[in-house]
Length: 403
Image (tube, rainbow, N blue to C red; front, side, top):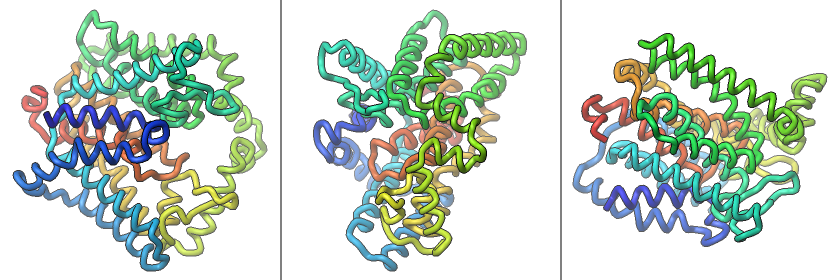
């Protein structure tokens, strides 16, 4: 029952914009119904697990929030502290009180890809109003996920199914290829420059992951990586006209044609550039103590679109130290994780752990271009891959292989 509840909660969170199309607090309501009862029960029965690194990061972050509340008391900061606390408690609960069945996680993520791709197709063909063009520059969204949220579903689908094709030794299964195609379709229809950029940067890691896991068969590694390089090259050539006229293509043209890097950033997105300058000004004036939730804004009144600068400006030095500890603490697990991957070689576990590290990289890099969130719909794409990596890190290989 608990596993079904968790999977349903994950799917609802991936439907990020149902809080707009259905009910503003749908994810918090689903958390109360689907997660909270099991959380309370497990805390009472199993007690509390001590995690010094996690506790330190959480303590520093909450301390930063509280000090900003003392300097600039306001109700909004109190609300955001409570929401952060509940999200971090859920992260703690998922990490230490649950063991995910990898097949189930793959199914629920792929279901989100399939449903959103289907909604896009139905909307594009004007059959059912399940998707529509939502921005003037050609970005599509569905009734479940608007532009910005939709691209994350596509990115997750690409990571999981590409790694399943490369690292899972199950033969004759065309489902990963089918979902991979749908995932690419979703990313292209969303049109997010940030999403495409971060996807491109993280793709560089995949050859190293493949070589690490399949290091015993160097001939196969060479053939696979050469084939991948050829396919990528042909894809770039074929898609070049589309890429050059797309939002991200125009951004790269401006980047390389500008006289300086700062001029390039300003020409690509002048509003975001101004936000960043405003955030730096605020932080330099008072780098130690923040001034409360959503106080780091640009001249246009919008919160700065950079999680790290926003947290530093809102919650001060303790806040940013705590956030960085939470966001990047998993890197300390990597040496042991990489060692285990070399031992087990190809298989479902390797595919899911490698795709989870890519999801984590996507999440922390995405923060460079977007404000922080206190919604489960944003944090779920960090909580789930972190839990998978931690379980692989912690448990004996034989025990992990059973799940």
